[in-house]
Length: 214
Image (cartoon, rainbow, N blue to C red; front, side, top):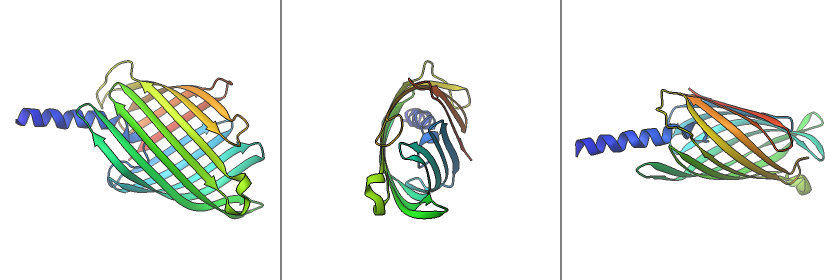
């Protein structure tokens, strides 16, 4: 009985350590810095997780659109709505919402942020879906929407204190980006609390993602 309990705890730990580093809600009391960067987008997010079910983020986004470059400053709350822990896998559902501003002519215009995210991951496979919206109520035609799907696998199984590697394929659809559809293969490397992703899209646009928890 004791050996079975220890086995379940170890499996649960190993199945979650590879996923918490890219999630909007991590472990209680933790902080994280996440950044996603490409030619058409920069996204920086500083997050503090208060409890295992919610966190607060401060976010800066620069997005190249068909209307030109747009810049947003938005704080938002993130909630873990549901988690399923299985013997060798985990699934999560998240909701993020906030209100901030878009920089327009040296002033900030009201902008709301809403995102829904769900994922499933084992030590070998990974799949996720995210839908998010930036809504400027005084100019509804300029609202930005993005859908993101990711699928990946680990070519080998590694422990938490070893270098972990993943191959991930990401598909993004946006309504007002110059490249409305982007397909990007990534190599993900993470060791303990640091994660790095490197990728190049089908249109030759390189992307660098970096995340650290402390």
